[in-house]
Image (cartoon, rainbow, N blue to C red):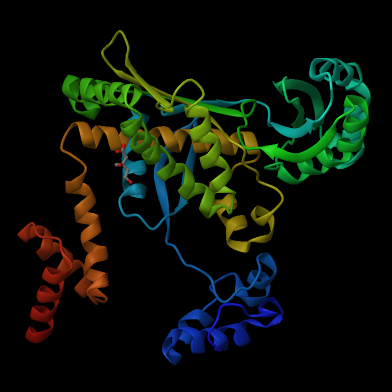
Length: 420
Ligand code: MEV
């Protein structure tokens, strides 16, 4: 066997797929045993979750502590491979507590389904014909999901946008309240059901029918006041505001600034098996609506304290999809103690704000590398082969020497082993 064209790979069981990989990539028996470790998910569940499964990928779950959001305490699970994110979030949340923690509010969970139409003669005429039938179209959409409607959700409105009048392209936006779900399935089903009707009314050809990840109606907002003295005085306040200004003036910086925000949000999304790609796409597109800029805002109040806020589309669910089928994701939600997608959105927005605060405070003051590298040192030690108590010993010695590198780690490790 030489090629990657393997007919029926999907029909094989996990062990057969691993056997194939063993030959293709020259894997050892020890490596195959590593693949056999299926963690808490187990072979059966994993094999039904996606296609061509061979194993699972473990990422540590850490708990961010100190979060007080709308007066309620949260312990927040974060699944992430990057050191320092959990510690930074916890530290930022601790400082926010001094002035009452985070206040957060999320809009109703309204998602947009897009139905694209082209080929009609009169795009604006089509727009008005569709709007005239709005009530009937909403009724048809709602017939697709009586359970959602019973819960108070369902299709609520229709909007029509003409994207091109010369070579007509029109898009219908179906606005759906998806309640506690992420909503992709409900919205896509409704959009597909409406397609033939829209085609007939518009006298055009319907092609794409899909949810938009730019969830501009489903926005999570959080804000926090950081006590000036707690965070390092006026210098820290001014430094953070300057870092924010930098992000508003320069997309190169805004990208990294926003990456820091998403470090925290994504980690919670991964821990709860939410579609983090959807939130990532939505967050950056939202930040780019008027030219790419910061997702957060930082300013000073009349007391000289720092005021931070965040507004971000948040299409997350606590029911449906992998959030319901993945045993550990369900457990994470129990740990989180959130009762609705709205409450979960509040938590995520607060985590994003905290993460951004921690990053830009460190950057504006001591620089990020000190804290980062200290935590990174443990990973370097592990990569060099350190195990158990050796990990901290090697890391500490590298930090002392101010040299956090693989070759140094190896040298220290050999020294420790030779001694014992
Ligand atoms: C690293 O993962 C995230 C930061 O680069 C974010 C930032 O620069 O604001 C530290």
